[in-house]
Amino acid sequence: MKLNFKYLVGIPLTALSYLAFGQEDKKVDVEELFRIDTPITIELEEDEFERVEPKKKKQKRNTFFGIKTKKGFTKNGFGDNVVLELFYYLKDPIKIDPYVNEIYWFDFRRKAIRAGKNVDPKYGVVLHGPYKKMKGKQVLEEGYYYEGAKHGRWTTYNNDNILITKTKYHKGWYKESLVSFYDLEHTQLREVIPVQYGKRQGEYFYFHPNGNIAVSGKYENDVKIGVWTEFYEIRGRRKKMIQYTEDYYNKKFHPVTLKEWNDRGQLIYDRETYGFGLPDTN
Image 1 (tube, rainbow, N blue to C red):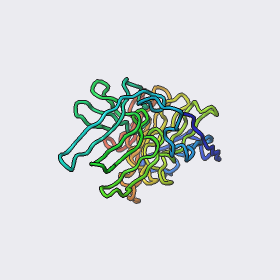
Image 2 (tube, one colour):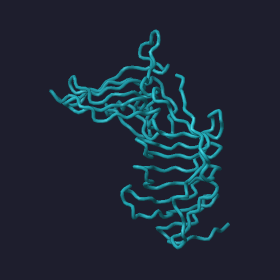
Image 3 (cartoon, rainbow, N blue to C red):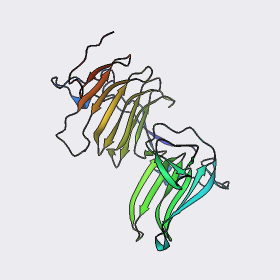
Image 4 (cartoon, rainbow, N blue to C red):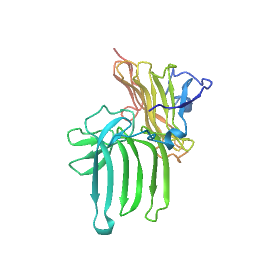
């Protein structure tokens, strides 16, 4: 499936060359800690999500995005409260995208659809293709999966057939998410900024040129939340961990450094245990 992209070239902000975290007695502008250059940014066109599966002369049975699948279903409840889920799944195990926050798969042991980053290929299969959740004739939720990730337009309804939510995705990322690359050929991923309804929302990633993660963290309602981690380029070792607020509406919380390691993997600062920096000894 060919993707149409809209290019947005912006002025570089600042380089990710020095992420100084400092101790509590030093004045550090924490908002500058993870600012980066984003010279090449792409955003999917609107119609890419309106037509998840373009119509062709004749679609092969149970084939979606060029991949053959099998049809499955699960039922829960009794009487008028029976909830039916219809879905398709991949016949063979695949390599899961490690950066997508939630991969959906069917667990044969539990006879239920599960979501998360860990898929057990021994007892489950990855969802791929159209999905529909129904209660009687009433559709409660429907959308598409692409190799386990939500893709295209997803909608949810209440029991009175009133639309509750409509969200657009691209292979697990919100449709509005911005992606930048190191190269014009789009082969070296540089940064993924999760965006929903015009605000940063979800898992954030920045990558070193060699492909290893440089920074990872999470946004909620345009605010950094939880623990953000910086990594060394070589071997992907952790470098620093910063604690941000757990609640985006808590404006009084000041980010603090939790731990810091040298490039040999040795802990040189632990706020909880020591409360001060440790000497970098050989």
